[in-house]
Image 1 (cartoon, rainbow, N blue to C red):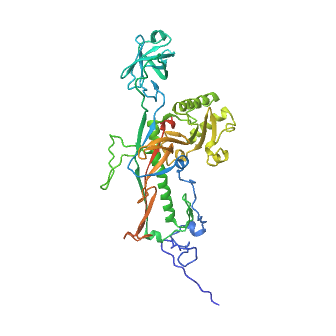
Image 2 (image 1 turned 45 degrees about the vertical axis):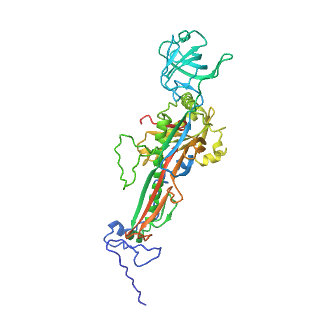
Image 3 (image 1 turned 45 degrees about the horizontal axis):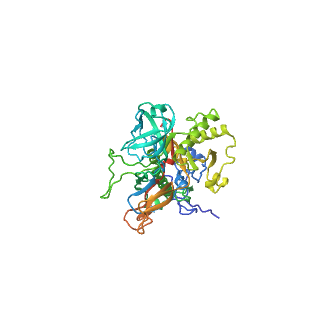
Length: 486
């Protein structure tokens, strides 16, 4: 019986029309004898790997804000909150009511440079003479707008206590003393608070695929950071766009800057309002928090345990000044993480033993599952993890300058201007615009004639939009670790 021969027609380009399912059709064979393939391709049948190689692993860098913060809706164009001032009165110390230089007239016992102060007659103070280092106790006998007179208990004048003219002084109030039958304290101290604000920015992106490309699907098996898998390449690209946009939502909250008065930025507004930028995490810590050299291996002398211990102790002392939040999380780049590991190993090879994991429901396993390792120094617990954003060569690692941040765990109490009451919020949280009409936390919609029918555009356009800002409360409890080459 004669054998039938079936001829297959191949496009002149040597490529084929892929099928919508994996079936053998006359239109989806490749002719390796075609002149469009090179000599090697004609002689040997190449091995074809269907799966896309994930050469960079999980490429998404988002996770930081999910670990340390929360997201809450807002309805206004601006968020305003107030933070309490210090309870006790201190002057001449950085971060206190008056951090300017306070100097003494040693013979007249007067202090100048106090600025607007709350010292009152009858109060008693502890003062430190910064030149000689002596600590004295004194009585406040007179006050004026920016000056005060203090009489030392130990002598007739400050000069008798070792002070010299223009002596810099630091002091704080520790009590008061009045004679029998005297009148009460004159004046009162009003609580000090500071008001802060931030505004949301609108973040947008778009993915587009033509109708023709959407109908011609290449057979490459793919998987994406968003969890999608299969053989639809253009959907893989959409998944990448969405993941990239989600990363932008976090990166904008970390890197955001307020527009300076001298800036010439002029955004296209289409008749709407412009923008003034937004205050991100790094900007908030730089402005209101603690800035320190990093913990990188190149920045810390770790030849001895004492060197590293001194660095850690200095950090603990600085935290003591700011309120002593017991549990803190360190998000570090590779250099800083290795530097801390080296220092801890020098101090004690079993440094994790005995560490409290209270922030993780006191479960060491939970902390390790989340990528944290813990250690304790003084009264502080530190939980350390790598921050991919600082290590990825396509993000912060490309420019460097920052080795990590310390973020306090837990919540703080602040006065919300809109609600008119004290509320508890995570130190770090995101506010997004939302109402009963529109939720702008993460919007996406389809336009065009492919996948939708609301336009004559022969394409599918997937739009993404979010409007949000970051609230960094009590930034004085955060530490930004700058690299030495920043």
